[in-house]
Structures are given as C-alpha cells and as structure tokens.
Image (cartoon, rainbow, N blue to C red; front, side, top):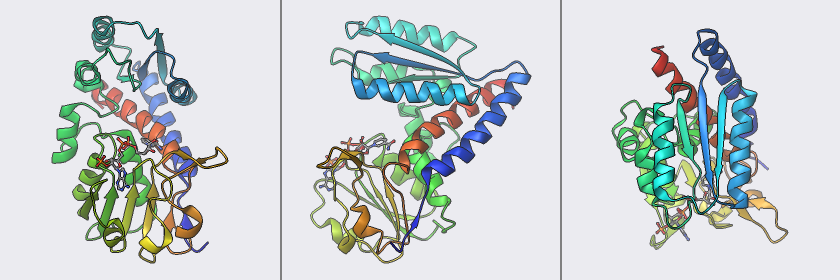
Length: 284
Ligand code: NAP
C-alpha cells in the first residue's frame, strides 16, 4: 500500500473530545446540550444507527432523549411529537431516523423540525444554506468528508474534485461543500457514460454510490485523495465501501478505509451540529 490511511476513527476521537469539552462548558452554565432521536418501526439497521448515536451523545455529556414508536404511528402523531420537541428548551437537536414507514411523508417530517434544531441538515432551508455558504447545519456525512479531506493537509482550493453520486443527503451537498472550498467540481451519477474519464482527472474523489468496486485502480490519478462513503457487504458478508481498497491504495495518495473512515465521522458531525445548536441558543 502506498497511500496514507485517512483514519476516521482517530479524527472522530479528537473531534468528539472537543465536543465533550464544549458540552461540559455549556452544562456548567446551565445549558446542557440535548439531542432527541426518534425511531419509527423495527428496521434492524436503523435500530443500530440510533443506538450508536444515543451512545455517542451520552459519552460526551450530552443529554439524549430516545423515542421509539411502532410502525403504526400515524404521520399526524409523529408531527405532533416533533412540534412538542421544537418547544422543549432541553432539546437543541432533533433527528428522525430514516427510512420512515411508507405512510409517513419524510419531507413533511423534516420540514416540521425547527430550523434551529435541524442537526441532520436535511431541510430545504439547510440545503439552501449549504449551497449559498450561509451559516447553518451542514448534512453530517458530507460535513464529515470535508473534515477527512482537510485532515490530509492537502489544499482543496484549485483542485479538481469528482463526486460519484448525487443524492440529496450525500452527493449533492458534498459537491456544494467542495465548491464552497473553491474546488472545481464534477458530479457523476448512474447516467454518466464514462465514469473513469472523469475520475482519472480528479485530485479528490468522493464515492457515494452504494455499489462495490465502483472505483478501481485504473480509474484513479496517482496521488489522489479518495473518500469512500459507500457501505456494502462483500461476498463474505463483511462491510466494504464503493472503492476497491486493495487496488486503489497502491495508486492514491490518501484513502479512507471502510469501516473506520466516513462512518464514525457521520455520528461525530451530528454531535458537532448539536453542540453548535446549543451554543447558538445560549448566545455563545
Ligand atoms: P443513493 O441515494 O442510493 O444515491 C446513490 C447515487 O449513486 C445516485 O445518485 C446514483 O445515481 C449513483 N449511482 C448509482 N450507480 C452508479 C454508477 N454505476 N455510477 C455512478 N453513479 C452511480 O445513496 P446515498 O444515500 O447517497 O448513499 C450512498 C452510499 O453511501 C450507500 O452505500 C450508503 O449506505 C452510504 N452512506 C454511508 C454513510 C456513512 O455514514 N458511512 C452515510 C450515508 C450514506 P442516480 O442519481 O442517477 O440514480
């Protein structure tokens, strides 16, 4: 392997320690930061994500409220619960775990969360703030990817970045954050005819597809920074990313592993957003 590993676990540890210090300072002034996490239904993967988020909050001294509802919860009941949390002064961030049962409109749910508590950064207003560079909440996964890229010490300004994937939660905000950092950005997707043509020119590649081996060694410019957002299972059932790690790490300059790259950073940036929400409310 010639590439340097971008260690998301180590960077998360540093950032979470800072969250812990800021949480303690807020708590000492009577403003303990609080996150409410809502889970509707019995999706096992969602249950794991939610458990990890609540645990991460508790470890850094944040107050966390976990509410679990049956899949039969109505949309009106969920919206009423969110409105109550919007008014709760002990809660600074509200997260509703996706996906929701089919009878509940996710966008309606997201837009019901107070913009001051939208720590997932999924609302239309947060998307606009991300696009325009205004202060606000950045979606946690792309926000974490930016921190991983910055941790390499490589300049982003003037570089060519290729984002593979254009989802509203990862690919599109990722492209906006890179653009905001003055990269020249290309966004590729399932209708891009020759993906390799684009990735071979990239100084930075962010792969956010959800398919193994989307990026292989022959598609990478020597020395590039590679961020692998994908979460897939290989033939042995082990967690793997979108990038052929063994091959690409012989060509790239820096690379994130899966697991231990983007995954821990997503939860970390949720904590960072919650602390920022609490600091804003406390006028800090
Ligand atoms: P998504 O909504 O399914 O979007 C996937 C994107 O990939 C789409 O824009 C799609 O293009 C594009 N795509 C599909 N096949 C392609 C191909 N062959 N070549 C180029 N682009 C292709 O997924 P997502 O929510 O963005 O998540 C992407 C991956 O990241 C998933 O594996 C997910 O589990 C993972 N993820 C990880 C974290 C973490 O914390 N580690 C957080 C979020 C997501 P079209 O738009 O044309 O369909």
